[in-house]
Length: 237
Ligand code: SAM
Image 1 (cartoon, rainbow, N blue to C red):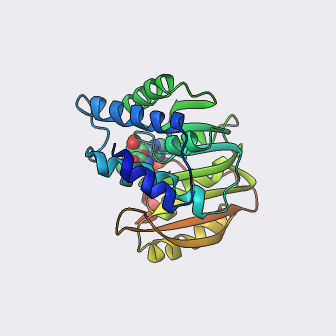
Image 2: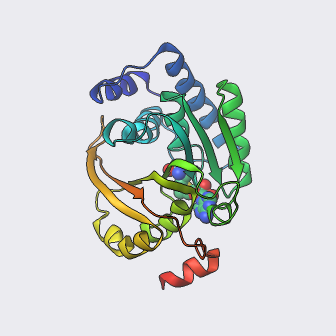
C-alpha cells in the first residue's frame, strides 16, 4: 500500500497512526496482494487504491460517525476484511467478529489476523441471516458494520437482528443512497431500528463521497426476522 497517501489521508481525518499500526496495514496489504493471486479476494490491487479505497474508506466511519469507542462489533459480509479489519487495527479495543458466507475468504482472514498478532478477533464462516437466528449471535453486538453486501432493505435484515437494543448499525454506502434508504425505512422500523444519522463524508485523497448511515436499534427484532435467504430475496420483487 502507498504509505504516504495513507498517512496524508489519516492526517486529513485528524488521526495519527502508530508505527505498529502502519506495519500492520503494510503486512495486511502485502498478504492481500499475495493471496489475491491464488483466490478472488478483491479487484483493488494497486498500492494507492488499497490505501484509499480499502483502508481509508474502511476507517472513515470511525472518525465521522459517533460510534462507540469500545464494545463488540460485527462486520457482516466482510470479504477480505473490509471495513472491520482496518477498524480493528485503528481501535484494537473492539472485540470483533468478521463474518462471511465464503469459507476461503475466512481462511484468508484467519491467516492475516495471525500474522498481525491481533487478539479479540473471531473469523466466522456463516451467513448473516442464519447467524441472526442463533442465540449465540442474535442481539449480542454493540455495533454492526457492513460495506458492499446488499441493498439497505436486505442489509438491515441481515444486520439489525444481530445488534442489541441500544446498539448501532453503520452502513457504508455510495454517494447516492437516498432512494435505497427511503425504500428500506419501513423494514428498518419493523426490525426495531431507527435511522439516526445520514452523513455525506468525503473520502480523503480521492474525489469519492460516501454516504454513511447510522441506525440505532430501539426495540427487539421480532422473532420472524431474519427470514430465510430465499424469502428475503422474494420479498424484494
Ligand atoms: N465488505 C467487503 C468489501 O467491502 O470489500 C466485501 C464485499 S463483497 C462485494 C460481498 C461479500 O459479502 C462477499 O464476500 C460475500 O461472500 C458476502 N456475503 C454476501 N451475502 C452474505 C450473507 N448473507 N451473509 C454473509 N456474507 C455474505
